[in-house]
Amino acid sequence: MSTLIQLQVPHPTAKPRQLSPAAERIVQRIILTVAVAIVSTILALEGQASVLTNTDFTQLWHAARGLVEGRNPYDVVGPGKAFPWPFPLLYPGPAVLVSVPFSVMPLRWACALFVGLSAATLAWGLSEERGAPYRWFVFASAGAASVVRTAQWAPLMMATALLPSMGWALACKPSIGTALFMAYPSWRKFWMSAALACGSLLLMPRWPLDWLAALPSAYHMTAPISHVTAGGPLILLALLRWRRPEARLLVALGCIPHTTMVYETLPLFLVPKRWSEAGWLVVASWIVLSRDRQMDYLQLMHMRAWWITLLMYIPCVVMVLRRGAESEPDATP
Image (cartoon, rainbow, N blue to C red; front, side):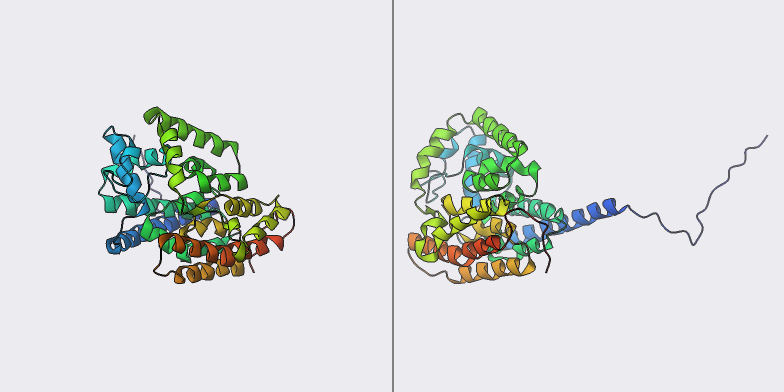
């Protein structure tokens, strides 16, 4: 008795199996995120090759290497130390701990990969926001260009507002992290940040004391609200819309002292609800960058903060005040 095996050959006109809309969207998000990661990493590699000074992440790379070697990271970074940075290490223990995996790489690649992964994380969060495509303008801002050259945390910090799973990053930069948590609070973010902080304490029991001792040297950090002639106190008007997360973000960022560099304006792109609003922030960021002059460091920081307050924070306050007291769906015009 013979067994007949019938092979089913697809009909020539049969349509290939299609992905479901949900699966297709995930594939699109992955492709977009990978593209952002590759482009950001390449730009960071090229940008850092032309930078004459160290990037911001350089200090954390040295601090993480010191930790791996059994030294106190706060004894490694700073004036007159193994890595002669102009300031003591102003990052808390969690930031050092997160930087450890990058410390095994050459410095240039570590900085570039950090930029690429941070930008990719932000892109993944933005791709999840179906009703807010204008937020992608953040990648056209002077702040994003500055991040590429300085290897800053700003994209990763902005991503915490879009991805609750990134809540641990709030512990790495408490100034901006506190503002973002006040605007977009969640217990998940709180416990993730607390877990990272506790983990860093196990490896660096003294880091809170060393970090607090270093903070008084951060004389270059100011709160935008303190720049009266630029309209800084007007930022408090956003409290009239305090139920809205972007209003709370504005007030918190305006009141908490932080480095007034253009890369720290990335979280402001969470405020716009229209293409025109996001477009203005892009234009304003480049105007701020164009105002740079050769001058004393403190004068330069004060000037940047003044222009950022006037051209970016105050317009964001106007954007918020034009809206209702409660959150509403994003608009696209």
